[in-house]
Length: 314
Image (tube, rainbow, N blue to C red; front, side):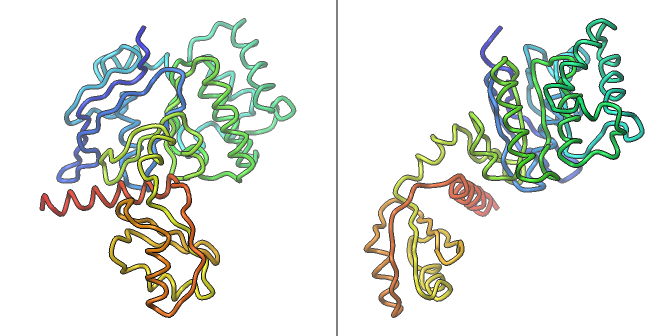
């Protein structure tokens, strides 16, 4: 057994003239929470569906848990769990009946089914809801039930496609605690998201933009590459300060956050004095300080570089 759960090279998917995924290469370590970050339409769902054998790639090689996909997709089914953003269990069955049905589908023995369902009801705080119809659960409860169902057969690999898009912040936080519990027991987790705070939680992260893999690494590695390029500006007139800085040489982006501005530079040659001088030339005063880069900064830089590459290739 290798230390890599997913190994993909040159993964490409075309739908007619549309290139949904373009030559993506990635390695997902075992027992790792690996995040896919990107906006809607970036290729996250398409990539996940190819990795689990639901879609056949146009080009590229995929190996998942030592199996070649899609050729050995049938053998992979019993070793993975898959959870989509849309609740996909049976609304007119109870919580317990849903789990019992999935346990049967996954081939668990009657004795193992009974103990496993009881274990999952307790772990995901559903034991007091086990006779309730799944369709009447709250969003957070449905999410916990879906995760319990995806793991009923104790899969080696769990694929989650934007699983927290329809739940409240507290439910999202609790959901992520469950993911780390699974990773601690050896489960590999690939989770797609468009939430920056969730991406920061991942052990490792890939950023997709319009089908292209534009960044890959740990959150610390990715933000570390932008050290010295991010600044915070506090000004009495934040909109005027934004206008003064947005077109300044070397500035890549300016984002207003409340009464503050977050300034991202194209390189690390700028200083606090550089920005203060720019504000002063516009007749403005502002308190400026260097701050640590964030994953949002990484995302802005990565997508900007991809856009430049596409423009140069056109």
